[in-house]
Image (cartoon, rainbow, N blue to C red):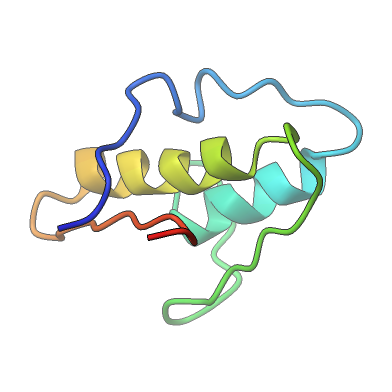
Length: 83
């Protein structure tokens, strides 16, 4: 069930640019990445929208990788919109 995560799609490998800094910051907050402020008391929905090749899949999978690696009690299922 789900789609395999690409091991290259992590926060460490994401190339930050002027046009995607907000999306990257929000993705790290949603993933509860270390060093990020906790803006929300509970889980938040995060909608990532943009053109082709801007890093939407990379960010979504980076969130999944971060949760999977830092909280072994949680299960992560990644599904593309096509699936």
